[in-house]
Length: 409
Image 1: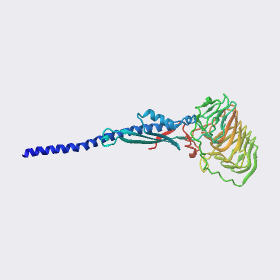
Image 2 (image 1 turned 45 degrees about the vertical axis):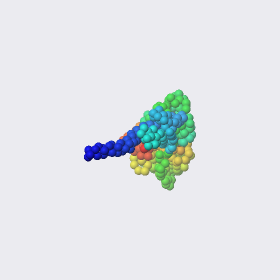
Image 3 (image 1 turned 90 degrees about the vertical axis):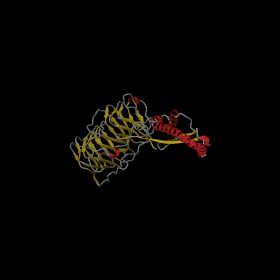
Image 4 (image 1 turned 120 degrees about the vertical axis):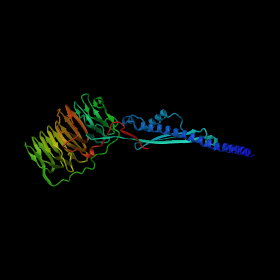
C-alpha cells in the first residue's frame, strides 16, 4: 500500500514539475530573445557610430562643394547595417552630427505570451575638433576677395608657415594672377577659395573650416604720453632715437644705419615712413595709432627684434584696429616678432630675393596684395627662439581636413 502511495505521489510531482516547466521554458526562451535583442542593439549602435563618424570626417572642401554630412551618415549606415529599421534620422547642429535608429526585433519564444517583438533603439553623436597650429600669416577680412593676392612675377616662399585666408568669398581669396606667381607654405587655407593659377599654390589650397576670431583681440595697446617730437624726420646717417610718443608721424628719409633704442615707440597720428633708409632696433615695439596710412616703406631696410619680456613680449609692430591701408615698396623686412595690423590692407611691391635672418615673423593683417618680382621669404621657426612666441597664437590655425574625430557618447 505504501509503495502505491509513493507511486501516486510521484505522478503528482511529475505533473507539478511539468506544469512548472512551462513558465520556466518561457522565461528561458525570453532570455534567449532578449539576448538576441541585445546583440541586435549592439549591431545597430555600431552602425550608427560608424555613420556619424563618417559624417564628421567630411572635409571643409567637400562641404563647400555640396556634400551633405547627414546624407553621408545615412548612406554609410545603410551600407553597414544588415536589416530594416522602423525609424532612422540624422541631423547636424553646432558641428555635431546626431543619429538615431529604431527597429522591431521579432521574438521566438515571447510570442507564446503575446510578446511578438522587442523594441530596439540606439543613438549616437560625433564631432570633429580640429587640431590647432601656430599662426604665421593671417589675412583677417571676413568677406573681401583678393586678401591673399599675387601679381606680376612675385612669389612668396614660406615653407614652415601656416597661411590662412579668413574671407569666405566664394572663389577669389587666394589668387595667383599669373603663371609666374608661386605661393608656398606649410599649409594654405581659405574659408572661401581661390582663382587663376592655383596649381602654383603648394601644398594645394584647401577650404578652411571656419572664420577665425582675432587671436590678439584682448591685447591692450599702451597709452600715448606727451609728445617728445612732432612731425619728426630723421635725414642723417647713424642717428639714434629714444622711445616715447611721436606725434604726426615718424619718418626716416635718406637715413642710413638709424637705430631705435629699446622701448616702445608710439606714433600718434601720421605714418611710420621709411624712404631710402635703413633702420634697426632690438627690444622694440612700434605702436601706430590714429593714422589712415600706418606704414609707407620705400627702397629701405627694416631690421627689428621685439621685446623678450613684458606685456609686449614678441610684439614688433602694432596698428589700430581701424580700417587703414599701407604700402611696402622694394623694402627688405627682417622682423623678429609679430606684425599685428588686423585691419590694415597692404600693397607689397617686391624687387629682390632678400632672405631674412629672423627665426620667425608673424603677419596678422586685413589683406595683402604681393606684386613686383623676386621672392618674398618668410621664416617661421618658433622652437627655442630668443624672442618668445605669443601664447595666444599657438593653437589657432585648424588642421587641414576634419581634424580629431570622436564620438560623444
